Image 1 (cartoon, one colour):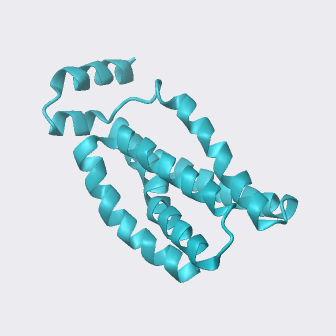
Image 2: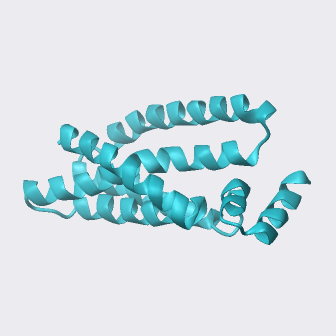
Length: 157
């Protein structure tokens, strides 16, 4: 199952990289966040190993993109002098998340409940949808200069 998960991550990086370039950083992030939440939650209700593997494959497609998208968006939003700081904060957040995951696994011993415990809280990220701006770099690259200027003015404050 872990091999399938890893292989699907490689495929997902390829697919979701194009999605980000075509639809933008923000919409793409929420598309694959939705896919991850639904697939991970559904895996708690499967009763056969093949269906569980298929759902884990789908979750695996999204995991690298879920990790990389906020990082890429943050790097594109700050100046070069703050990129190292963003990278450090991103890595610290990832490490804290992995540490907390060990505690969550300790609390939720049943794999079905664990699947729900790690997927359903991700729905809270949808609360950020309205306040999270699109990448000004992507907006400029796609010739959406007015929207890019608006985002840049917000960042400049």
